[in-house]
Every structure is written in C-alpha cells, then in structure tokens.
Length: 146
Ligand code: RB5
Image (cartoon, rainbow, N blue to C red; front, side, top):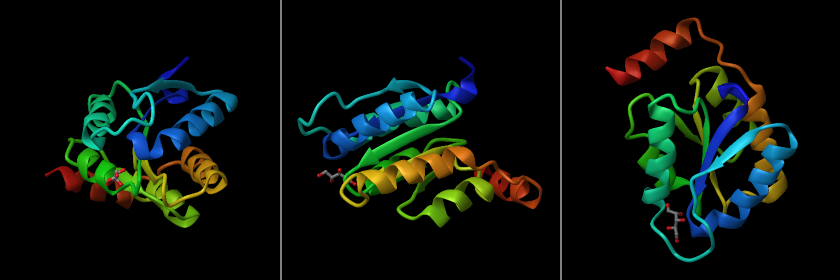
C-alpha cells in the first residue's frame, strides 16, 4: 500500500475509544493504519503519543496523521513543535476543509470530549478528501518554517 493510503494515529486515554472507532472507519475505507497508542483507557500523558505521531509525520515516514486527546489542545500544542508538522485542531467541517485547502495540514487533531462519533467520521472524511490548493498558499506555509 502506498504512503498516500497509510496513516498513523494516536491518542491519550481520554480519546482512546474514539481512536478505536476512527481506526475501524479508516480501515473500512481502505486505509492501512499504524496505531501509536494509547492501548487502553489507563491514564497517560498525551505528549508521549503526540510526539510519536508528530515525529513520524515530521520525518516523512507518514504523509498524514490523526491525533486525539480530550480537548485536542494538548495534542496540537505537542505536534506543532515538530518541523514541517501542521496540526489542525478541528471541530467543524469548514475548518477541516480549509486546513487542507489553505494550510496543507498533515495532522488532524480531534477532541474526543468535544466531538461526537459521527461528526468525527465526517471531519476525517472531509480532511482526507480535500487536496491542498497550492499556489499562493504554498509560499505561506513554507514561511511558517523560517
Ligand atoms: C486528560 O484529562 C486531558 O487533559 C487531555 O486529554 C487533553 O484534553 C489535554 O489537552
């Protein structure tokens, strides 16, 4: 399976259950999924899992990742410290779409205590289906790094 249909996912305990459901959703639509943990609902530090996913996207090993914690805040703060990572915390469809079109977001972050299952699936599907527009937005995202 090519890199384009592979995705890495991670969560803390607070969003473990939603992570498991999103994994199933992704597999059902033909993605190969690498699960960076957490492995159950025992309390953990979100940063440990955020760093695993962000490092894999930052290095280019995976083109896209999904991170979840209770609010999504800790995961986005962690992931956005990594070079070339553009992690987008989304709870509405417009932001999920624009984060791809204009920001070429490569990690989608969701709050497991914020969004319901169906909205989460819609956010994932929209994010995966939307391509980066490039053009003037390429220069803008490049300037984030320097
Ligand atoms: C865990 O209680 C919670 O703090 C975490 O899931 C996340 O929301 C942090 O930003």
